[in-house]
Amino acid sequence: MEQIPGSILTLAAGVVITLLSLWASQQSHLFFPEQASEIAPLVDNLFGIMVGIAVAFFFVVQGAIVYFMIRYRQRPGDEEDGSPIRENLPLEAFWTAIPAIIVIFLGIYSVDIFQQMGGFNPGDHAGHAMVGHKHSAAVVAQAPDMNMTSDVPMLLAQADTSAEVGFGASPENVGKPPDVMVDVAGMQYAWIFTYPDSGIISGELHIPVGQDVQLNISAKDVIHSFWVPQFRLKQDAIPGIPTELRFKATKPGAYPVVCAELCGGYHGSMRTRVIAHTPEDYQAWVQQNTVANAPQESPVLLAQAASMTPENRMVAGHIHQMGITPETLAQLHP
Image (cartoon, rainbow, N blue to C red):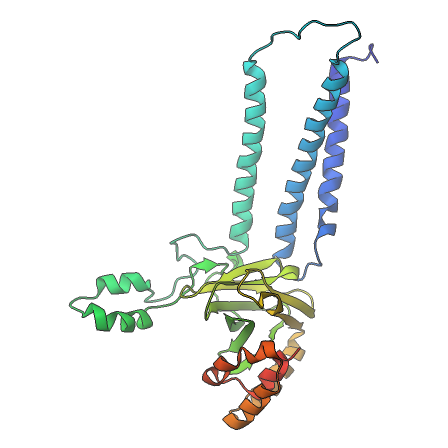
């Protein structure tokens, strides 16, 4: 061992650590559920790179600690103090520069991923421009000669509510309308999905595979968080602030929708499903439910609500106002 140059040992250790970090990076996807959306591979690749860097740092730091513990251990009979070494500018510059370069690289790469996913730039409406859009606060500030007490609520109601938070269209879909648009309302303790084009109201999210889907997310009471692990998508539902998610599912199936924000005592029961259909099955579901969601007499609706579980009865106070049908309530039933 003493006859092997230190540079060769350092090079060999570097090669071994590099191979280990690459292997760990490739295996990191095993921690995640299946990929079921177009952006899922982007998120997993970013996570894999961070895992590889973390593994490399782990072996470098722990290996250096073990090496110095053995190489410079106190020998029997050696009672002297260690060498009074203080400061080493080249070494300090080295271990400062390397992490700085890695952090800058991860920052640039993550921003690139964010933009590929359609993330909004704060205050920038490019790619998400809406004609005549004005922020509600700006509308109030620009209104001339208005009675602030009586007219502010009207102005806020008239203000455009375009989302500035979340993920919009991917670069290839910028300027194009989505294939499917769904309004998502979060409330204690359920998600309600409304399809503006067909008038369908559902307790589950139904979408077609391979088509561009836009979710307009809002909250009726407190902050919730719309999370689909298989899609690698999570977006808060914030009272008074519209948010948006735009994505494309890639695999048919039923995936859980979880509220990822502690929103109250029954937070754990705020779960539903997103069902990704083939385009043909989705059209069949739309046709079937357009008829099923026709207006019903309120006594029927209330009778249906009376048979629900205690958790879903908490939603009953909202159902009549929102026009939810007995069929919708049946879907909310666990």
